[in-house]
Amino acid sequence: MAWPYILLGYALGSVPFGLLLTRAAGLGDIRRVGSGNIGATNVLRTGNRGLAAATLLLDAAKGLASVLIGAALGGFQAGLWAGLGAVLGHLFPVWLALRGGKGVATGLGVLLAACWPVGIIACATWILVAATSRISSASALAAFALAPIVALVLGNRPVALLALAVALLVFARHAENIRRLLAGTEPRIGSKA
Image 1 (cartoon, rainbow, N blue to C red):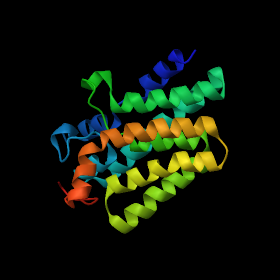
Image 2: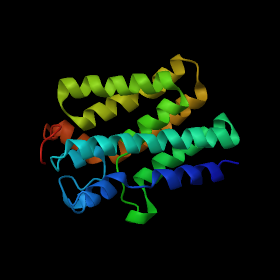
Image 3: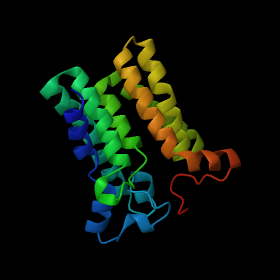
Image 4: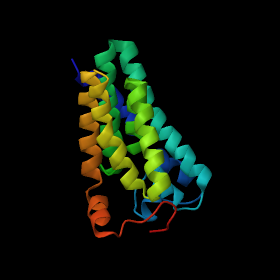
C-alpha cells in the first residue's frame, strides 16, 4: 500500500525551510521577495548566500531522508513512493495554502537516494547548465529531463518512472519560467528579479 509512504514523504517534504530560515534570520517573508518562491534560488535574491545554501541543502535532505526512511520501513518501492510524496509536499504544502516551491532541490535529493548515479548525473547537469547559462530554471529543466533517460539506460525502470513523475511535476511548476525562457526574459542566477 503506497499511501502511508506518500503521506510520510509529504509530511517531510512540506517543511518550508526557505521560509523558516529567512524568517529566523530577520529577513521577513521570502514570499514577498523576488519571484515569491520559497526555494533556494529566491532565497539567494535576499543577498544572503549562506541562507540560500542552507535552504538548498535542507530541501535536498528532506527528499533524501524521505526515500531512505520509506525504504527502511517498507522496502525499496516504499522509498520511491515516499520520495514522490516529498516532492508533492514541497510543491503543495498544506501549511502554505498549497503554494510551495518548485521541487528542484527536493527532487534532486530524492533521485540521489533512489539511485545515486541518476542523482549525481542530474546534479552534474544542473551545475553544468547553470555554469554556462546562469539560468536556474534552464538548469533544473535540463537535469530533470535527463534523469528518466539515465535511469532507463541503467536499467532501473522503477526509478525511471519516479524520475519521470518528478520531472513532470517540476516542468509543470516551471510553466512561467518556460514562457520566459522562450521569450528570452528569464532572470539569471543572483539577479533581484
